[in-house]
Length: 274
Length: 350
Ligand SMILES: Nc1ncnc2c1ncn2[C@@H]1O[C@H](COP(=O)(O)OP(=O)(O)OP(=O)(O)O)[C@@H](O)[C@H]1O
Ligand SMILES: [Mg+2]
Image 1 (cartoon, protein in one colour):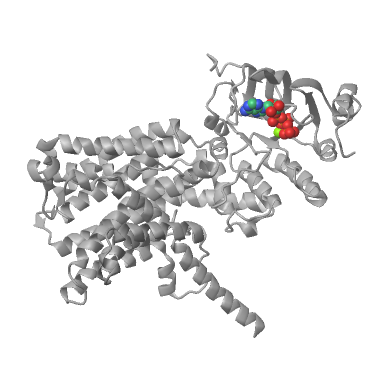
Image 2 (cartoon, helix red, strand yellow):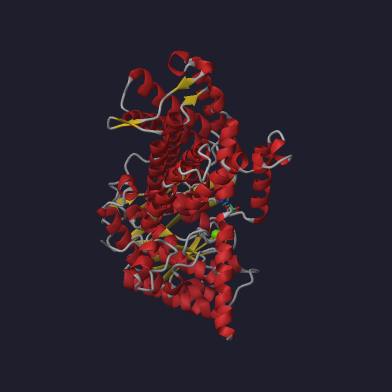
C-alpha cells in the first residue's frame, strides 16, 4: 500500500538510508521480519546472513521490487530530498540516486557492453521519442555525452577495450563489471550490490574490493552490499548488519560482528571461508 | 556536421571520402532507396516484366509493416497477430477519406496513422496484463474485430465487395504507377531511417532491456507500460501507413485481404528476414512476398502446386529457426566473417 506522504519523512544528519521495522511475508513465510538498520553517507555497509536469510528480499523491499507489508525505507535522494520509498513505483527509484545490481547478473545479451551500460542513464535522457526518431540536436548531443560518460564508467571498471563487444558470451566476471558500470551511470547516491563476489576467483575478488572502495571514493556514493565471502566483507565494510531467518541479529564494525555470539551461532554449520 | 557513430561499427580507419560516406548508415539507406527507385526504369525498358513492379511495390509496403512488427517482436519481445487488422484500418480510412470525402492523400495517411496508433495504445494496455500466447490471441481478436467492422460498415468500406481507390494525388499531381512506386520507396526509406534512429537510441535500449530482462529494465528506470504503449502505437502506425499505401497502389481493398494469413506472413517476414535487423526485414519481405509469385510459380510442376507459397514460407521458417535463428541476414554476416577470417589467416601464415 502506498503511504499518504512520501516526503516529510525525517532522516538524521549524516545518514543516507534508514530502514525501520521492515517486514514482508510470502504465504506464511516471514522472509523479513521487523528489520531495522541505518546506513551512513559514504560508508561501505554489509548485509550478511546465511542462505535464505532474507538479504535479497530486503534489497527488493528497499528498491520496491517488493512492496513491504510494514515498515519504512527512508532515503536521502540525490537532490537532497528525504522521502519514504515504500509504495513508490519500482522504475522511479533510480532517478532518486538509488541503483542496484542483481544476484544473478541481469545484462542484455544482444547489446554491446557500452549499450548495456547506457541503460543505466535511461532516466537522465531529456530528448523525447520524436526528437530521437528525427535525431534532432538535443537527442544527438545527449547520446554523445552519455556515450562518453559510459566509456568513462567502463574505463573505471577496466573493460573499456570491450565496449563494442556483445555482452552475450562474455565471461561472468566481465558481466559483473558491466552491471557495476551501469550503476555508475545513474548519478548514484547509494549503490546496492547483491553478492558482487559470487563466482569470482581470489584475484578477481581482491580487485573487486579495490573497485568497490574506488567507486565510493571517486563517485562519492554509499555502498550497501550483500556478500557471502566473509574475507571480503570484513576487509571492506565499515559496518555490517547480520540477519538470520529474516530477523535482525546484530549490527556493528567487522570486529564486533566477528565476536558476536548470535552471529557465530547463526553461521554454525555453514561452511565458511575463514 | 557531427560524426554519426552507430553501435557495433568502428569509425572508418581509411580517409577515402567515398568509403567513409558509404559507412554512414543514412547514406546507405538513401543509396538503397535510389537503387530501388530505379526499378521502374528497368520495367519501362523491358529488362524486367512490368508486372513485377506490382509485386515489388507490395514488398516495399510489407517491409514497412514488418518493420513495425520487428519493433514489437524483435526488439521488445512482444508478439502480435493483429498486423492485418491495423493494415486494413489504414487502407480503409485512407481510401474512404481520399475517395468519398475527397481529402488530400497525405492528410488521409496521417489520419489513418493516428487512428491506428490510438487503437495500438489500447492493445498496449492489454499487453501489460497478458503475455506470450495469450497476447497473440488477444491481438488476433482485435484484428478479427476490425475485419468484422470492415464487413459491417459497408457504407464506408463497401462491405464484401470492397473499396477501390486511385493512385495518389500529391500536391495537385496525379501519380502514375511508376511514380507511386517511387513514393513507396521513399516511404520505406524514411521508415527505415526513423526505425534506425529509434532502435539505436535511448528508446531502443529500453526496448532491448524490456525484452532481455524486465527486472533490469525496471531497476534502470524503464517504465514498462509506457514503452509497451509506445511500441504498440508505432507498430500500428507503420501497419496503417502500409495499409494506406496499399490502398493507393494495389487500388482495392476488401475484408478478406485483412485476415490472419496476412498477419502470419508478416510474422514470417520478421522471423525469416531477421529479428532486430532493418535490412533483414526488407529481405524477408522479398522472400515471403515476391519469391513465390515471381519465381516459384514460373517453375513447371512445382509452380502448379496449390498453395506453393505457403509451403515455401513454412519450410523456410523451419529452416531459419533451426539453422539461422537470427534470420537470413545472419547468413551474410557469416559469409563476411568467413572471408575476413580467411584473409587474416592468410596474412598470419604468409
Ligand atoms: N517472491 C518470493 N515468493 C516466495 N518466497 C520468496 C520470494 N522471494 C524470496 N522468498 C523466500 O524468502 C526467503 C529469503 O530469500 P532471499 O532470497 O531473500 O534470501 P537470501 O538471504 O538472499 O539468500 P541467498 O544468500 O541464498 O541469496 C527464502 O526462503 C525464499 O524462498
Ligand atoms: Mg540473495
